[in-house]
Amino acid sequence: MLEIEDLHLDLGRAPVLRGIDLTAAAGEVTVILGPNGSGKSTLIRAASGDLPYRGSIRLAGEEVASTPPWRRAARRAVLEQQASAAFPFTVAEVVRMGLHAGIEADHDEIVAAALAEVGLADLAQRPIHALSGGQQARAHLARVRAQVWAPCGHAGARWLFLDEPVASLDIGHQLEVMAVMRRFAEAGGGVVAVMHDLNLSAMVADRMALLAAGRVIAAGPPEEVLRDAPLAAAYGCALRVGHAPAGARFVLPQSVGA
Ligand SMILES: Nc1ncnc2c1ncn2[C@@H]1O[C@H](COP(=O)(O)OP(=O)(O)O)[C@@H](O)[C@H]1O
Ligand SMILES: [Mg+2]
Image (tube, rainbow, N blue to C red; front, side):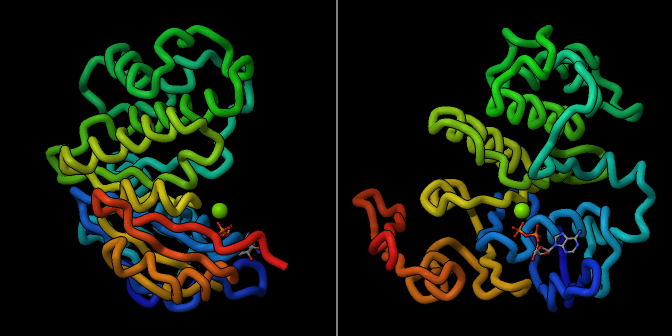
């Protein structure tokens, strides 16, 4: 479980997270929604252990702020919103960076399997900077997957914290990445993903949390969060929630605005 209680976090002098309560379960995909600047990335970074906070964030029952870095690295992997490589490594070298010394399985096999999972096997030896933006995003996802390759380890569930993992991808690759998220959760791992596309979120999420101005204004299964009123309150525009014949929800804007 990821258990967040009364989380407060300031950046500079500004309060960014203002009393967040949220739980996410292993075996499920939890999607974080909310407008630009609502605190989604800050929440991911705090849960990853990368920012000091007030309140409590526990992963596998252990407070994140007092978990040693090596145990955090074995327990969760983080895809940052703007993941990039500073030097012209090959794609395979970038993925290999996700592997830490504690992983006993064959590293070459994990690198190859992680690249295959995101559809980049053919580009393994290319310099990462010679890939398109979307291909680079998938290479970084492969690196993050490699870090927590087995969704369930001897020490329990592992976690993927993904900040906008499908933002720069075409629809085919968006679905491929969502399938990676679902498979990881179905194998017992935990997934927390920041998403902007409400319709894709409705397809992949077991649970959702909708943020606005540093607070959770709706949380629960998609049918509780994807409702006209909380969406309008969060995004400041009129959205209409409909039901597709198969039971899935979809969200359509009412107009392009004034
Ligand atoms: N380093 C920083 N210093 C001060 N304010 C920041 C910093 N980083 C982000 N913020 C502010 O925190 C708020 C939340 O940012 P962020 O978590 O990145 O939002 P989101 O990911 O939901 O778009 C924004 O208002 C942003 O301007
Ligand atoms: Mg963000």
